Image 1 (cartoon, rainbow, N blue to C red):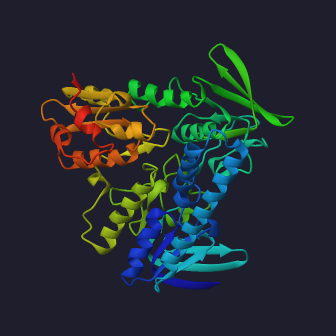
Image 2: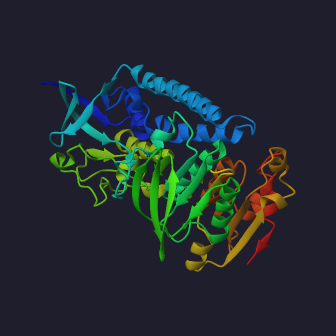
Image 3: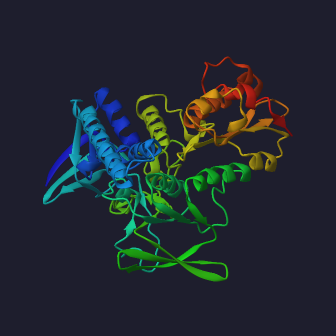
Amino acid sequence: MESLHVDLLVIGFGKGGKTLAARMGAAGHRVVLVEQSAQMYGGTCINIGCVPTKALIHHAQSRRPDEPAQDSLLAAVGATTTLTDELRDRNFAMLDDIESVTVLTGRARFLDEKSVEVSAGSDRLVVTATTIVVNTGAEPVVPDIPGLRSSAYARTSTDLIRAKGLPERMVVVGGGYLGLEFAGMYARFGSRVTVLEAGPRLLPREDADVAEAAVGTLRDEGVTFVTDAAVVGVTDEDGHAAVRYRVPGEEHVVDAEAVLVATGRRPATAGLNLQAAGVRTTAWGAIEVDEHLRTSRPHIFALGDVNGGPQFTYISLDDSRIVADQLLGSGTRTTADREAVPYTLFTTPPLSRVGLTEREARERRHDVRVASKPVAQIAAMPRAKIVGETRGLMKFVIDAATDRILGAALLSVDSQELINTVALAMRHGVTAGELRDTIYTHPSSTEAFNEVLGAVRR
């Protein structure tokens, strides 16, 4: 069996891993990056995650009412596939062009804490490394519901971004962010969508007014929601699946040509043989790390979704900065440095949030002021009317004593951009008054801050 020694071995072509590999390679270090599939160069985000899903959402939003549903979906899938193919090639070239970086396609398996076997068919290579980084991401969780795993109509999000046809009816099992994004997208393409959520309410992390407004926009698109719904079985019938679910006191059946399993994702650690390296994992399968992202073996790090942190591409990117600081810098950066990390649910319009909700702020005994207004009533935000999307609301939670912004929820056009401005203000102590009185371009969505931050209540 051939062997190779390098300075850095990265397992997984995700955002954090590829960024670190490129940086270390550019600094002259010998690097090997292993990815199990050539179709995943660049990682989850560009191939089966953020980029293709948001591209399809954009195409769904742009669909003309008179455009045949099947044609619009197939055209969107084709355009999205072209985009992801281009990005995949660019990501491979980004590393391949660095002389000291080698990309290997194969499955990685620890032999001990310093050695990893990479296999591809009958070929085997043992790579030993001074530093090893695991960046294998996460994978969908398919619950043990009778008939679900064997159903010919069960789909993951990966299946749906490569769909070859539009289902007339779709059932989404799980009302989390992934489920809601696909529900809205497929409803806009023309499917009749039913979301079955096991919990008592949707978007439980959000304040009730924000959650109700967001769910209301999806109802506007024709999505049906059932809460407190326990799916008890899936049966394949002639041309469709029958999904049985139970709500308190009664059982129902809903038919669908596609059943999207959107019940979460778990760290992808199966097959890595982490025990051979002495790397500890949690009960959920995530790799345990400290604030510097070191595992129980100090020379082995874990980046991105696989370490059990927030499952966002930009967190994986920041993880790479922390590890790079350990390997090339002062070693002072930690995960504790992160403040005001925003996130976005890409419904139409998108819901973006950062910091504390009103409920959380009051529970922490802040003296709270709330600034909130429906987008349709914000006169200072003509952009919403220009683009024809006036649904939603903007809500800020403010500390009454300091005028500091504690959190914000923006359900509006362009919110995925606006929230970054709010997060930056929170990190640098810009007060609500300063954000309110800043000069913004016109017509723009940021102008809304001039008005909303003046609409304050206790």
